[in-house]
Amino acid sequence: MTNNLAGIRRLAPEARLSGATVANGFVFLAGQVADDATLDAEGQTADILAQIDALLAEAGTDKRALLQVQVVLADIADAAAMNRAWDRWLDPAHKPARMTVQAPLVDPRWKVEITGVALAP
Image 1: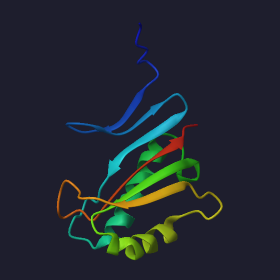
Image 2: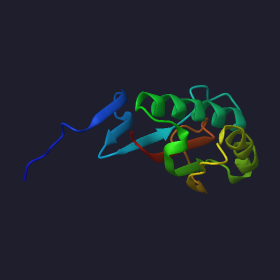
Image 3: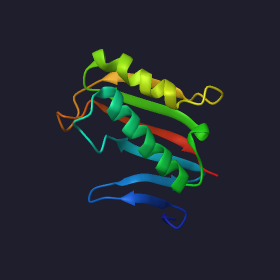
């Protein structure tokens, strides 16, 4: 079996992962967390969505191409705060499929983590 890795682009590489990978017409986002963990859930969500905008722009696309988004909240009580930031950011004509769950996050200061899949250009 041959591996064809030539068509894979890795964006925003870090020590253990890439912020996103682009392959076969899709952009796969890593779980994005706020750069400033001292923010409340609404602020962390806004920070994350700005990071997603930047990653999608680097991939040559934007939030209108998002197909699916998964939101993880450390505390489901923060859903309303997360949704306030989401609603300000969302393009109402291009809503992705979305799920929201509660789960512990790696850093206890993180309140929100968001990942998703978008179409690449």
